[in-house]
Image (cartoon, rainbow, N blue to C red; front, top):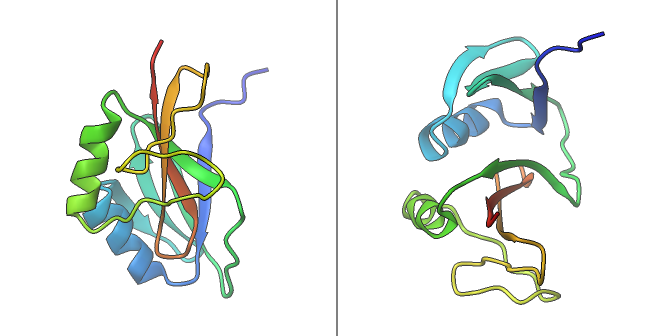
Length: 125
């Protein structure tokens, strides 16, 4: 059995604001504004931002991107108005990058307008 390509999901209570963020700030390829979701192409995958009446963002990362140069990507997103998260329980550098010991990755987090936690990861292997 082959399941096929994965589809990614997130949610928004304000579709116009979410569409603007994902297209203008993150630069995703907008496909459609459907009755129940905004649809974006993300390379070979589809992202569906579900339209909901009330949204309570989960306390974990819902969507992330792998990048080859996390510092440059953070700088570009910061120029577009993205603020990177700071967490008291972990040591992060001036850009908000966390370098977990022995993990082989650098990670940073930011939020979309609905409070969904998004991430960037640069793998070092």
